[in-house]
Length: 88
Image (cartoon, rainbow, N blue to C red; front, side, top):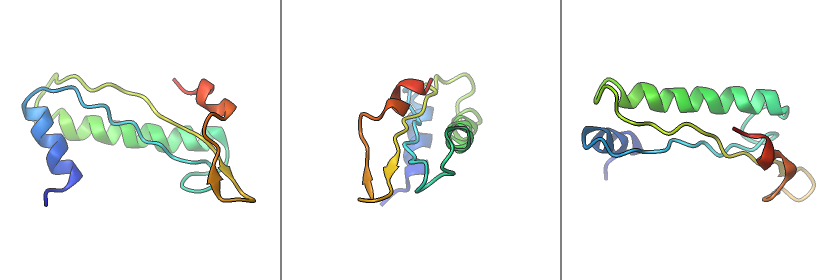
C-alpha cells in the first residue's frame, strides 16, 4: 500500500491541487495555546508545500489549517468550538 506522501507526489505530478490541512487539537497533539497550535500546523502545511514543489514546481497547493480543542474532562474533540473561526 502506498504511503500518504507517495499519493501526494502522484497528485503533484498530475498538477491536481491537494489541500494539506492539518487538523490538530491544542492540548492533545499540539501545545495547548492557540499560538503553539498554529505554529505546529503551519510547519505541517509548509512541509506539504516542500513535498509538492520539487516534484512539480508551481503546482497549486491550497494552504490552511483546521483546528479544534480537546475537552480535557471527556477527551472528546469540541467540534464547532470558537477556535474554528480564528484560523486562516
